[in-house]
Image 1: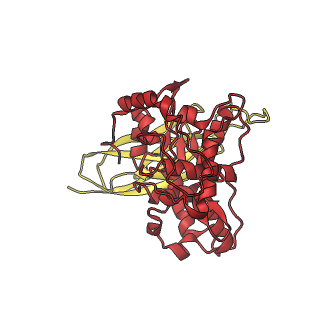
Image 2: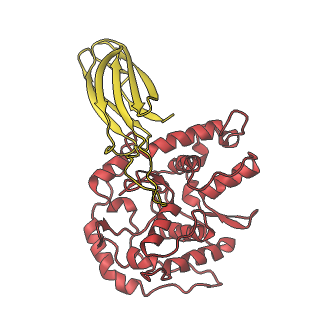
Image 3: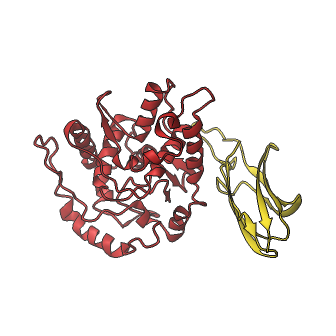
Length: 107
Length: 275
């Protein structure tokens, strides 16, 4: 299971724009490289990243072979209500890595 | 960490380039028995950090975004939990959070009296695994060894490098020193010809650094992963078309001791981000 790092504030004021940063360890092998014996190294990439805010999609990204190893994604959300942020990375075989963070919204 | 570091890089490198020709002639004679302090050929030591582009430096300085921290995280887990449930872990002897490792990486490689050999951090970790954990040593450059090494080295971030080269460590140091000044490979180049005489000049797309080991294990953008100092040394050997030693070879550990002595005073900045 790949290891992920999340940077998200634990608290926010209502309507505040919060910054979320994510980093996940993954080789993002493009499938175009060859090893020392000349054999093609099979493609092995993450294909999708989704951030759910209380179950609703808040941010989504499609990943492709040209993206560097250990993808770093940063984006912004408007904090409306307290709840859970769920982060899901899906690889090309459909294997999912999930992380969650709680967000408390109070004035 | 390093926003206020010396940015007077161009002036320094120019000075080094001018000094380079005369400095390179002062190669200390190997095999000195009275153990005087060896002659230093660099007037000012500069970490590899100073030779990176600003965006690469920024990536290293950000403790969240630095991709090397993925290995530090994994190393912390291995440190606490060992490889499996019934194993003795590093934390069984050295404490849960790794505080006891502060400054340790700055003193390695170090002579180990028991095995009568020179051990770097990787070697020490594997020695501990065999002796105290009754585990087989990790393969050099394996994900686990890189992670533990990164975790241990990270605890010394900011500690000035100060290795011990006298007494039983001296022959290892001298062997590493001669390696640094010996020509090798089809290109017939010695380490010092790039990393002392031509510091700051361009080698194809890259700016020649002083070859300081402060940031290793380091995340190299070219590798797209974290790698050990020995992987970097192999890469240099291949660059001059010399047959590289296997990672973990005694020749490289000896060279590592010489490089650490040469870097004395520079701060450990592992896991660094390099081009």
